[in-house]
Image (cartoon, rainbow, N blue to C red; front, side, top):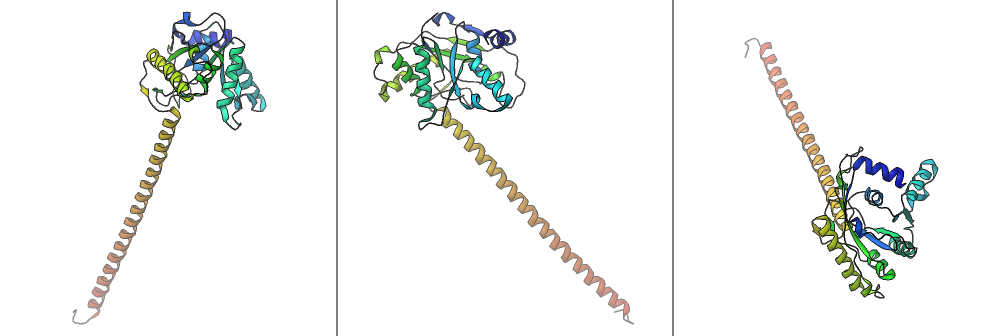
Length: 277
């Protein structure tokens, strides 16, 4: 996959990279990255010599049919790990368990602390569960990573990607072994996550938003829904107004017709009288 997918990406898009020296040649490490595009999980592994394992929803791996098997083979090939989100605590616990297993094998584990792609290119608050708990449970160093301009390659609604050079900045490893054994302390988890997000912000230059990206996406969806409903209400009001206006004009036309008929009848009666009166 590094030769085929990775080689094709590097040849077509020529991503620039800074800080490759911060990736250890061997041993476990966590790559904590901002998340701008679906392609982030492909560009980052493409520029590294080592394998990086990310997590992906299990649906990518168990869809039936030929297309499903091809999709599963592709995601396995690029280092994606299936996570079953049907459990009681969902993807969170599954992601933590998967991350720990990857690191215990001495490999690189990739994670997006924001939990989802940024809806508008800004950097959002990191979720304290997955990243911090995996780091404290394993003692693995956390390497902050900033993806640059990957969201511009294929914006929402665009079918064909734009050929341009995305960037990847890799920061110095962060050591959190001083907090080991405290992976269930929510204040420690918050502190670790915030420190990582601060380093990502410095690397990416993104504007930071102190709220979760999932909450912002809900706000955007609710605003879009409200706008759509307002549009429907305005359209219905306009249709009702047009209907009332049409009825009024019809009534007026009928009145004018009736008046004209009365006047005509009066003229006819006058014409029939001998004196013409």
